[in-house]
Image 1: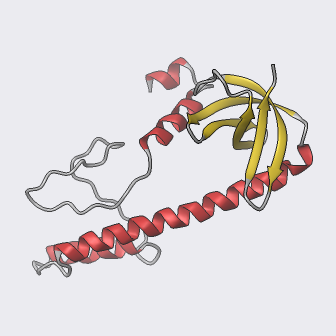
Image 2 (image 1 turned 30 degrees about the horizontal axis):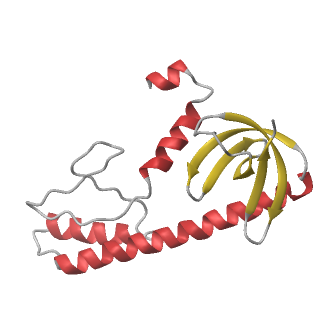
Length: 178
């Protein structure tokens, strides 16, 4: 909240960077008497979350467990089953997120394909061995900095030129302007 108040214009960029650094979530089984990491973002040791059970399989499992507990019945799943269900749900959620991400990238590449050669203000949102990534704001989208990435770091503001798009792969490539 303090960072948001100090720099409200750049707070969304900071927030996105922190979320990216945290990595993906996963479903885990918390058994009585065993320590788990809990929910980092909410700073809770014991956490559960539910949406509409007709939409998400993990919610159906959670509600079956809660119903059994409230009715005083034995849990409808053994611990090994719950661990397998958690791993399966995590994998399926990550697979769905990949498809959604690919669709968004391809749509952005299509939208920007007519703007090759144009200049944009950008912010560096990621830097790793796989590449350096920048986000532009009009339209808000992310792409790879393929030239001029030396010496830049997350949070740096740059002026970039759009040099290439590949709609099928969802690639958007920029080069840094000097």
